Image 1 (tube, rainbow, N blue to C red):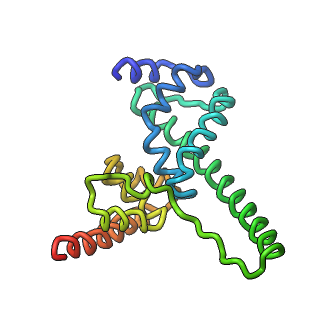
Image 2: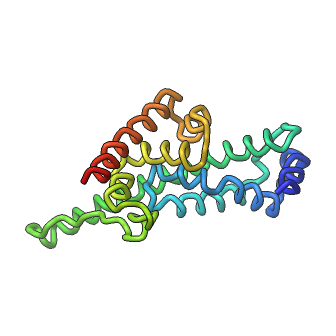
Length: 196
């Protein structure tokens, strides 16, 4: 990994190549997935990151960083990618919303008395950790997307509240509040599991 950090620091603005891009993307991929999940949910988060990666890859000449050290360079890259990921995820969400509205309109016209379709999550996605109690896993899954993303970025990825705020484009106080509320909700469920 040290070679990747050194390589990233020596790349001149506007000369980021595909190989360096891949190494930088790999270093921040999980963070970007959690960032996308705040917009589109976990099911579509990786798709949003992959679409954003393609967009970024075709626009490498637009990435500029005048940072001399590898850590600052990577932070600039991560912020640039997070912006592209958020935009791609928002576009996906809008497109999905428009599609569902059109689908609902067609369904209403063809079968006005049919029950509404539900949006179920994939079973593997719902149980992200097989060792976790099912009630606790369900509680994590039930958290609102932004709250879950803030929690995962803080607890799993170890990001600061300031960094989470930057990634998700929310005030730092909101990031703190979301993590606090998620922890409170999970603590209540964990207590129920322990006593039940």
